[in-house]
Image 1 (spheres, rainbow, N blue to C red):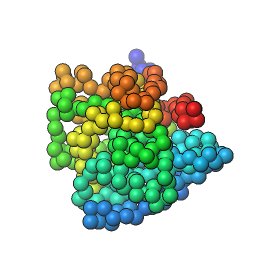
Image 2 (tube, rainbow, N blue to C red; image 1 turned 90 degrees about the vertical axis):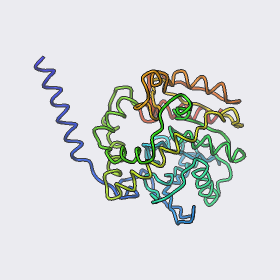
Image 3 (cartoon, rainbow, N blue to C red; image 1 turned 120 degrees about the vertical axis):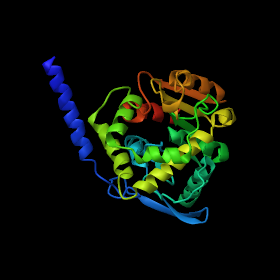
Amino acid sequence: MLRATALALACLVSVSAIAAETPTYGKQLEGFSYPHPLKHFDFQSQGQQLQMGYMDVPARGQANGRSVVLMHGKNFCAATWETTIEALSQAGYRVIAPDQIGFCTSTKPANYQYSFQQLAVNTHALLEQLGVKQAVVLGHSTGGMLATRYALMYPQQVERLALVNPIGLEDWKALGVPYRTVDQWYARELKLNAEGVREYERKTYYVGRWKPEYERWVQMLVGLNQGPGHEAVAWNSALIYDMIFTQPVYYEFKDLQMPTLLLIGDKDTTAIGSDIAPPEVKAKLGKYQDLGPQVAKLIPQGDLVTFEGMGHAPQIEEPRRFNRTLVQWLER
């Protein structure tokens, strides 16, 4: 008993020490190191000059002439695709990994009408500048909703579509989740801290497990949110949450025209607003072991790979297995 208590105290001290040492990063994540050279795409949207950070990584293996575009999730950045970028590059693919407006190394505008359509248009403009006419599109979490919208808007430019634990496999609003105003989201985001992020990710992303290498992504997110752009980051995050909640893609999976792969960690429970949903509603949400097979059947050329016992981020939890599975599907 004494030993268990001592271990628990040691863990608490360790976590507190980590939280106390959280670095802070600039409004566009200045100071955080990306795995490949960071470039910037300057463009005009909604009457203002904006900038998207992105990585454009050439094939390191024998080039196959194909490109893959990676779309990150809500609590993620282009950098979190690090191992997938490396695996795809080694397999001969050119890899483009942008940070969407409002996220990470990109502009945090004071006012912006967020929509998945707008983010898709922004991404399409970037790819046009880079000369990418057609690509495989891979989206994770919120990036899965964006990738779906992009594929619906630009079907001729999307060779294949892959979705990693995408949110939006259900319509939370229609299922009874209460609406949060942008102001309520903003107040919530202002309170973000390392301890809360770490506990949420441990529970949801990694099914109660934790590895030291996950801490880097906690520090990335919290360092951005607690840096000099604190209020702008929180405000854009609130606007983005409103976009996610009010703009479902669930009803349009049936309209996807290209081969589509769902890569699903079946223990994921992510559901926007589940924390304020009535118990009877919450009990129905975020059941990815059911949502994956259900949505795969809705997609005309849908395929499903299940990562049993894994959570919201299988590409981070078991990168070798995830990347091998992805590359094998792309080369079929």
